[in-house]
Amino acid sequence: MMGVALRRLASALPVLLLVSLITFGMMRLIPGDPAAAIAGLSATPQQVAQIRADLGLDQPFLQQLVHWYGGLLQGDLGRSILMGRGVFAVTMERLPVTLGLSAYALVLTLLIGLLCGIAAALKQNTIIDQLAMVFAMIGISVPSFFLGLVMIIVFAVHLGWLPTGGYVPFAQDPWGWFRSVTMPAISLALLQAGLLARITRSTMLEVMRQDYIRTARAKGLPYHQVVFRHALANALIPITTVVGIIISLLLSGAVVTEALFSIPGIGQLLTQAVLNRDYPMVQGGLLLVTGFLVLVNIGIDLLYAVLDPRVRYE
Amino acid sequence: MSEVLPLAAAPEAVERAPKRRHPALAALRRLFRHRLFLTGLFLFGIIAFLAAAAPWITTADPNRLSMRNKFLPPGGDYILGTDNFGRSLWSRVVWGAQLSVIIGISVVALNAVFGTLIGALAGYFRRVDNVLMRINDALMAFPAILLAIGVTAMLGPSTMNVILALGIVYVPRTARIVRASVIVLREMEYVQAAVAAGAGHWRILRHHILPNAMAPMIVQLSFLFAYAVLSEATLSFLGLGAVPPTPTWGNIMAEGRDFMRDAPWIIAIPGVALMLTVLGLNMLGDGLRDVLDPRLRIQQ
Image 1 (cartoon, each protein chain N blue to C red):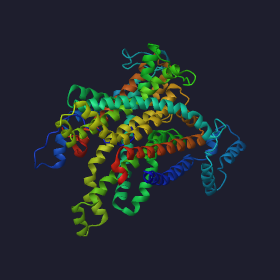
Image 2: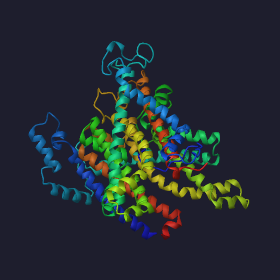
Image 3: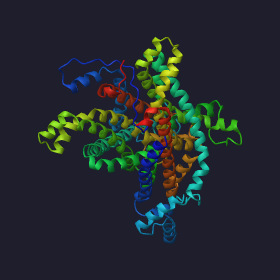
Image 4: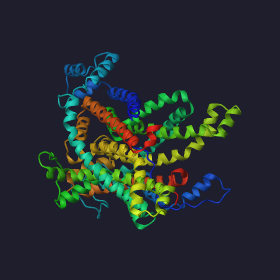
């Protein structure tokens, strides 16, 4: 088990190194002078020079690279121009909000996706199967921001059941938090739930055809026991891998959802940074989120090894 | 949205074509009996028609302001109503369709060229495989839409930059799929036979490997079209797409946000158009996968 963990971590290192190199290189995509772009049209040459010096853009390329990696090793991702503070600190402050929303959405995704997928597989080629798959197809086709807007119009503007936007911290008022993040979580979860339902259905169908399921049925085990103890337990193994992809989709989906519902998480932070040309924040935020996801995926691979003994002995 | 997943097949019965027919014809025949594929083709066909016929089917300039006619609901003189500047939503949504389709085609073309090239090189020449795939892994480690946001943020908002950003995001994913097929095909006996017969690398790739790697690639490209349209809408909703007043589905919806209480149709019309496009393309992709890539199909 330890070996799997170490090997997985070692294979992630070059990826992390390249990811950070790509984020470093992103600033060079800005056409012309990044400092001038940040300063805006009305800036004086002195202001532009000041920004250039602040960002280290006046140094030779190699020195900038050394400085970037040196900073990374110390947890220094640069300073946000908009906030005037370290990118790392600002991101960490917003992290719990995004994690809370994503966790809520993940619970919804798992509930809806697994239920629909299992029901569709067990009732293959019936109306239940077709309804579940139509739902899944719509789920993967409706843009989350459109679903969010429709929900705001229906449930907030017309029915007045839920707030149109804004955020209440959980610690301050759990019920208020629940109300403020329910619509964002649903709009975030639908796409993933659709994906998960489709994958769960195909995996369950695959497993239900196996010989050991027939044996279990033949020896007279009750149906529900066969489904949950034999089929689902085995189907969950490939589904676990998908959860890694789902978490990645949730975190990137949160960018749009948070902007739409004015939720002060990492997504909103990044969109504001993008619109205000706060390039260091964009760079650092992207690197942090991606690094976090690489770690999540390592965690999922380890979980995979726990669930499936065959992986451990390979 | 962005990742390539082994999705479940739709419950469609795919009949076996009679033997001794050209395989491409047989596949086409099966496709045109596939209900999901036909529905998808119909939905996407409508949007593609609107996009192609935009100059002839819209009478009003999509950017012509007419403050007297603002916030007209659908029906009446303006078939889909007007927005906050009295611009015809029919014109704007149809021209937006054209932009979406152009961006979709461009991203698909970029992927078809560079995805195939990188995937074929990595899969065929083991020496470059490691380097190319490490770069690929790194690019794929970024969440797709976040990387697209980052790249367009740096390049500046414009249609061209959206295409470029989506190219950077999706080419690695396509390359990975091509590489997987090439690796399998390279070990096939007929390829070994071609090597033994003295065929060059280029000839082997072009005549023996790539034609056989096309099926999963075509399936991927049809889903990619859907992702590209969806991502473009997301980017322009966030203000990173084509610059207003150029109409895109995303920026029409973004502008409509301020008026959603009194003029919800400004959001609903482009939203429904976007949804139908993506739905059509996803159905098309499902159908193509059922017919072209039977390994992924669940046997009925």
